[in-house]
Image 1 (cartoon, rainbow, N blue to C red):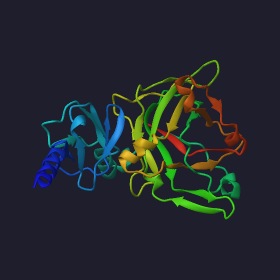
Image 2 (tube, helix red, strand yellow):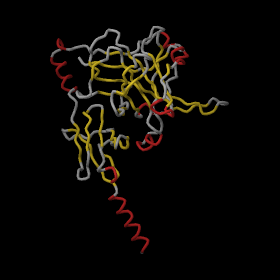
Image 3 (cartoon, rainbow, N blue to C red):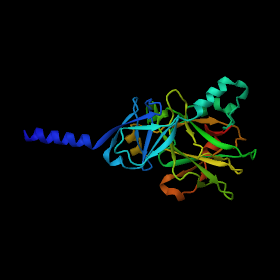
Image 4 (cartoon, rainbow, N blue to C red):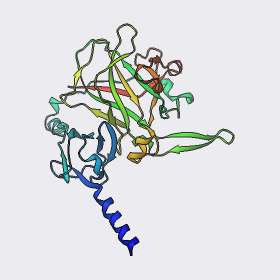
Length: 304
């Protein structure tokens, strides 16, 4: 009898040590795959009903909720809340205006590395694996036209990939659904002397992931976050989450970052650095990729 009572008490205690929260739109529609970042660390993702169970210790922490179709929002204490609301982005309204008046439709200007005929060569196929847990990559985007465009969106193409498990039998194992795993991204200014990443534009990295039926993860900056394309260019950085963070969010592997074949005249140059050397690590040109005439399929979209 004592054992049963003790078990019951433990069960009750455990139930009160966490709380179920629902994330919905302002129209009260559940939001699937919303990412909850607690104290700058990604910890939860909502299910198909927009629900998520949060530990009691996180309820009064600073929680940022992000989703590609909604404006990011910060909550400082949700102890007494059961439902949290996110505001839809105005992109939906723009689509309606385009349909109503095709004459007013503006072509979105973007900057992507140009795919060359080398992309169909065998050496450029099946090479889009994850970037590695000890590496951060950076892509340099020059502002060749010296235009003062406003950076609004960032697209990173991701994919599943294969890993060689046995050198003798050459057996491989495909990392299925890895393309939907989240990654960290940021923007850096350009060092005018050494032409490497210099300073972070945003203090904290953004966490983005590819959504179902898409081929890329997308970051859409809010109006407060949008900024002018610097005349000397910009760096976009990408790195994986930690192994522990992936496990916490329910993902087995980091995503593959899609690579493409480019011409020798490609100006969107890949760099990398080793993370174990912390933030002071030196950035280097990714000579292996450059010699193979490869780069990552990542691009910037500008505000119309």
